[in-house]
Image (cartoon, rainbow, N blue to C red):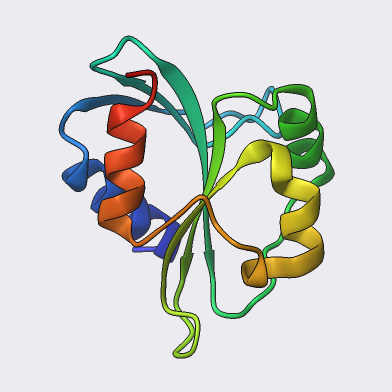
Length: 124
């Protein structure tokens, strides 16, 4: 199983109070991987990324999406490298800074449990 797909399954298992729709879309490039709806009636999107180093790669379409939709869009990154290991959550509106700084940019939340709790409570 590919790392991003494995990450998706891990996230889905941890967030039973979020209704997820996985968006696998070749029509509208740049659309995030996941559409979430939590118990507070809040919709949001999550772009999943897995990296082995500090740098995170984004397509021009992903940049455009997050710049155009700055609210309730998130980028969740799982770092597999030994020194950077863990999960970090960033607001989509900071995609340019994330591209420039990589995982050195301070995240909104860190650790899978903290990231999941934040998304479950979004809009409360």
